Length: 102
Image (cartoon, rainbow, N blue to C red; front, top):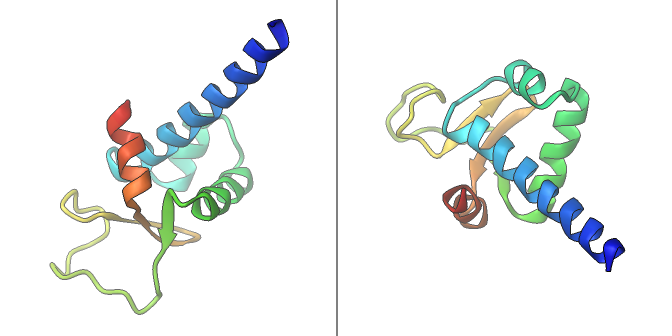
């Protein structure tokens, strides 16, 4: 029973970490360095996590030719995109649902 509880806690912590990163990216609009500081991860670890989150369907890396309809910077809170040094990301519906659960 104790092992099951520990496994559940690990899974739960993983979802909180994912939702925290998504919130930092799309709500607080933090840079990679700022997110690295808040999460305690290195920038490289954070980039790896973003890649995993993309594979899990929480993020979508946008095409480099992607342009904003408002022609504004990626820091505009109206946009669903976030530019980080490793590329441009958009929040997917799955990622959006996870942020709203928090």
